[in-house]
Image (cartoon, rainbow, N blue to C red; front, side, top):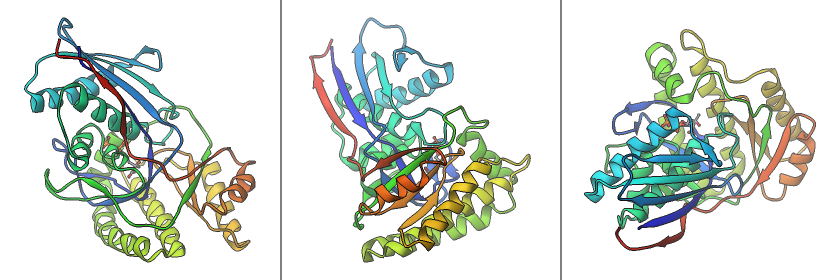
Amino acid sequence: MMTATAVAHPNIALVKYWGKADAQLALPATGSVSMGLDVFPTTTTVTLDGAAAADSLVLNGGAAPDGALLRVQQFLDLVRQAAGSSVHAAVVSENTVPTGAGLASSASGFAALATAAAAAYGLDLSERDLSRLARRGSGSATRSIPGGVAVWHAGDDQASFAERVPAPPMAMVVVTISAGEKAIGSREAMRRTIATSPFYPAWVESTTATVDDMLAACAAGDFARIGELTESNALRMHATIEGAFPPIRYLNARSVAVFDAVAGLRADGLTAYATADAGPNVVVLTTPEDRGAVAAALADLGDVIESGTGPGAHLLRSEGTEA
Ligand code: DP6
């Protein structure tokens, strides 16, 4: 019986992915750039079971919701197709990301699943091909394969993968305002944005340019430029989403208060720039030197957790012989 365990961490986009060019292949409408975290790991074990009639999923020690099981089964179908196997698998996953709170738990989840499943099914994939595989589970998972500061390229199936890019040392402070489930998931919200937001074409055009600007700023080690592009791109994404019909609004009054507080910290001489994904929580990009001061200053506004730049997805164990 083949079994493999892998760990992966979430990532937070500095330049966001919001919208697919091809839903079937999970190709993004634009490139994106992220920092991988070193907190909130997901650890996933995939065990092949020749006697099982279907794939199973245990999430945080309990039965997984139907939607999560279906996404895992569809993902494993892709792995089986690549491996020429028809054997089902038992998946056990421990996820420490607050699920559904807009911190993209699907990124660490599918990066860990891709890494463990590829090993269990005997696929020997390069980092590039592993990130292409993780992409099919969830777009943001593509960037959790390399970890660090990474770009996910737009392009066709072969060309749309993530890789690390040179960047200055970075840290983040996650300000959790609500760990509750969000009203509308990012997958559905992306579809509605594309279908109804009049701002969407401008989002695609401006974000395509911002990816190039961000990569240049990272290569130059220009932290102020990295930060202003990060905050601007996040607000542009939320504006585009708010332009959907019926409208979708992820940021609440407490989120906006954190954005204002972060601007105040900058006025006080700290390096701090705010971003937010598909939920009310705010993540603050800062330097390793300033992260403690930024976390202390924001502690009244939510639960704060500091993070450095994290590792890529990796195998912890892989063992066994074909059942
Ligand atoms: C706002 O990767 O969760 O976090 O590809 O449909 O699974 P699917 O979407 P997902 O979307 C993440 C959107 C985001 C921005 C980002 O991480 O770039």
